[in-house]
Amino acid sequence: MIAPHIDPVALQLGPFAIHWYGLMYVFGFSAVWLLVRKQLRECGAWDLSVKPEAYEGLFTALILGVVLGGRLAYVLFYNFSYYIGHPIEIFYIWQGGMSFHGGLVGPIVAGLWYCRKHQMPFMLLMDKFFVVAPIGLAFGRMGNFINGELWGRMTTADVPWAMIFPGAGHSLRHPSQLYEMLLEGVVLFLILWFTRKRDWPEGIRVAIFLTGYALARIVCENYRQPDVQLGFLYGDFLTMGMLLSSFMLVTGLAWIAWLLNKEKRA
Image (tube, rainbow, N blue to C red; front, side, top):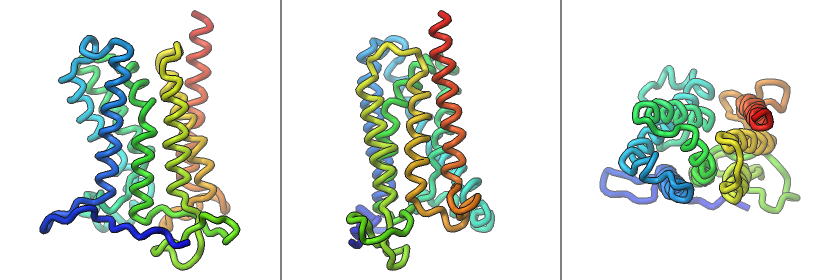
């Protein structure tokens, strides 16, 4: 089948265009804002250790961290040779080009700075945000699909959901954006959301997110076409996404082991 053609511009107002890719970020951030607040109310932290006005400021800092970290990592790790010659296009985020791994580190740094400055419980908030972070990922991958970018590797007609992406020639390909939306987004969110009230050590949900995302991403990378400017880093299997996710996997598993061992000793 041919991938559905969706105009990347959702709304045109004179010279101003509202892109679906940007709207996906708005939808994702809005869902995260509401669901984190719900969790803070459930645990009794809302309006006590986390004041509404401070929460709004924190969220602004996190959004900036996601956008700046995600874009900077994409420029540095995925397409540095291009952007060094076209620096103005670094700011064209509506065209796509965000690295999840940078979008992970950016808000952690911004959140740590903001929580220390405003005396907010950093690790508690980390747990709450990482429970619902997969929702933002799901919207982001849908944005990739609408943009017709980050398509999958070539496959055959035996895969009934294989698609022809206009920008990728006439070959049938895996819709890897949808695979990632389901595994990194929907499945990981359901796991974390329905275990959110369990009495687990503080910080373990962050570690579970890191582990779960890394596993999902490594699996999906086997169906995703490597970025043309990078290709495979080794042989015909290792991609940049796999490499960066491997570090996440090791970190997540080590963090879980450390927290469980710490609880056992206590």
